[in-house]
Image 1: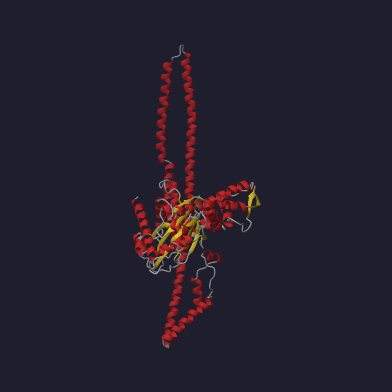
Image 2: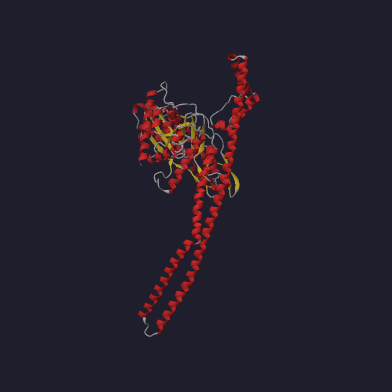
Length: 261
Length: 354
């Protein structure tokens, strides 16, 4: 029984170090060994039982207490197991998120690469077209200058005709390219990226949730079971009461103002 | 630890009070379960997929965030004692900064180790002259993690924690600002408070300038300067030689910076004495001597060795005398006071703000 108690105390104890204690303002601590605490608890239980119970009852109570204590220990083990399970889930979710992030990055790079290629192709096409237009305009000028005097009105007409023809063709090509782009890989990539971003967001939220659950620290209980308030015996009670009211009113106004805004 | 009614209804175990000092440099908490912690007010998020994988965390805080800042998008959500960009709430910077502030406050609450079945009531010490928008932003940041929250003036909470509610002048020296506040038994008003921007950060910049001028070729960052200051800061008689090692063209080189540190720290004294003079001069003449004889130095800046004596000497010279004392716990003075206010606040007030 004493070993179990010592072991339980060891498991339930929180570890800390000297630096942590210093930061918390603790300069000296009283030390009481686990064995000694275990012995004291055991002794207290035995004395209490001895004074209050008859022999047979005492045996029954001792057995029942042992059983209850072991049950508590098992429940702690079960809790630890569920902690391990949560840790595994968290690990799996982290891996999932990681692979989603990498895939998303890969897809984004692929999309950027394709868009860059498309832009390069268009640029090359423009360069060829520019040379073609320059040659046509050169020919028109040469033809106009061949007559004497040069027919500038006819030259203007021919250049405009040529310009509008090119403009019209360019517009048609742009429209067609835009339509085509919708159905092609870029569209597929964009939709895939959107879907993956959504999945990533979902997985990250799940991971955060798991992180919170796993990191769930039972915490340290406050010394107060209920809301306190000023003690009537406190020095300057009336003044402090008024100050509390002023702080509250200022905060009420602030929070009302914030919620209305 | 949320405002969700479903979760708060299960909070039957007790009530945890938390006092928080939300500072430009550090955020400290004191809680009614005995926990006292402090963290540098820095929040970092991994810059990209690679750094996230390496750091294995979504968000880092305090010293860890500062140490790993090269892999992080680092935020220091407070500047000169107030939330950055809170006056332009819709800008992307304001939104990112507010998120960092929320995460920092959540981390500070987490450090208090609350139980999930306890109500969490928190009082946050805010800078004396923070704007309404700024206070609202702090409230918004805190409400996500506590059941009820209130703000109060930082120097007031220091004084309340020490039960010095009248005839006392609190000088709270933070990183971003030095807040001076006279206490005369009632809640301090605007006229009772003066804020100076000469504080811890200003000392760092002054020391950095002096190092640049006096330590030829020395390479350093403002973070390194801050660490030197925190280790050696003093005014008056030097308690020890401040010999530091800084790289010069990659070679670690020793410099004696004792006098430079004193010179940098001394920039605090004139604005403090001037603030004290203004607060005393505008006070009831019958009680001015009482204020003068109870000047309380608080905040991280009060840890500068010899500062109380230096201020006292300057007061003797310029104001005809005075008595200056330091709080016992400069890092936790504000948080302890806020905790006491949280404890003394009546239940119905907390309820109304939930």
